[in-house]
Length: 551
Image 1 (cartoon, rainbow, N blue to C red):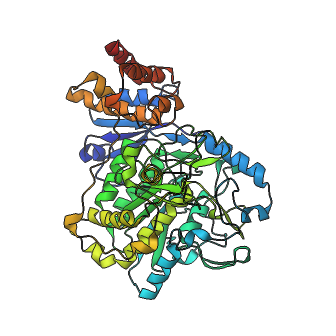
Image 2 (image 1 turned 135 degrees about the vertical axis):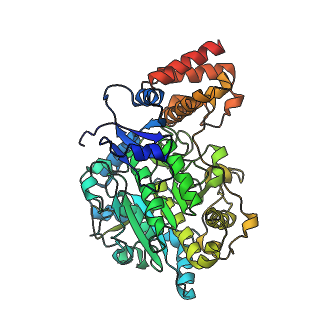
Image 3 (image 1 turned 90 degrees about the horizontal axis):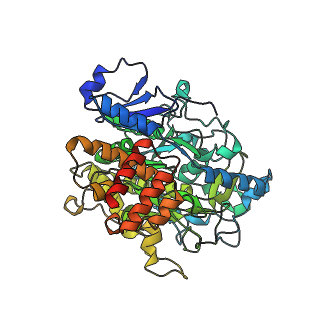
């Protein structure tokens, strides 16, 4: 992979400052209408920690409000899984027609996840087809792009005029979201082809499954593909920021291009810029679902990734064929078995589960093959997006009539959450349902029986932000000029927590409330940060100050 210049995502004090700086040739500005004045700026120092550079920029530039690294979420555990998968499957086409045998699955190969006992998506689609619904719903598919030569590719509902490419280093191809499939097999190109096949795969005859039907959505749907990364393994924060900027400020400007649903089967580390853009998406009334994330042997963390952790985003968790969690009991997994993330419990109120693994997956390696080895919360996410889109189609006028745009999101979420099946199979207890599945298991057909809730019954979610008040717990109230520094430190600390198993252990998978931590636990957390080679000097200095307070 070609080396690129490290970057910072910079928030300026106001839009007037941004307009004044538009001539700066080292910065990429987002669109004029963006309510958040953001720039993506090349760094001058390639040796110094990016967080240290961010702190220096805020300190020395009075026009900068906040700065953070353009983080690269590099999933080395995903790479290990891909290597194991390649060894298992080799080059045999027939292998893709068999299930992943260490997860529950039916006796014979079939597309089971669509049926009434599972997601109910097939029945929901048929109900709407018979209803004669006419209003079109537009879905933004944020992923690694698409492979147009695959038999599952739904070319008739892809809006190629609106497609965009925000993958780093591909600026010259901004109007082409097609996956170049050149990043190497272990980097998992083709991920977007797989998730698109679940969301809106076209009609395909597959004798191996006794199947001859549409794989996904097809009536009154339009897909806008947006390529935000070359690989699901390597994912820059700025790609997501640029995609949401495009959706909010360009596509949303016209009724004929407006996005109704966003699906993203990817995720990464916390970013204030992400939180701000997610807040704007919600305020515009756009339903968003993103993957809760995956782990291998509970490493580096088994808790949800961002942006799925945000209140204003629906988190897609996993449930298997036999209604048990897409998670192995501790010690039964390993670095070759991918499991779905869940928790902490405090964040599961906006989560729901859909079926994975052993669901359909279009593999770019074989353009004529739709396999049944789809796994990860990547496979759960497009099922939830499909259900949301179907509900929008059926209730289009009622949703649009709600007095505030955000109410559309809450009305869809209410139908989704209220009808989700509160069920989990033995040996799990009923009380475990919320722990693993949040609001329950997706029931797309039952969703369509729920009328749009009245505005008086809908509650607006608080604005999302990155919040880990460890510093405030120890240092107490801070001066106004120190608040922004603390927010930056909290963001970096959350990035470390999601990548450091030692911190996860101290926090008991983030189930330990900060305010309930003992003095010893607080000291352990500070020491873990000091021992983390990826922590900035600024954060380490703050940890030394905290240790002095605790001593």
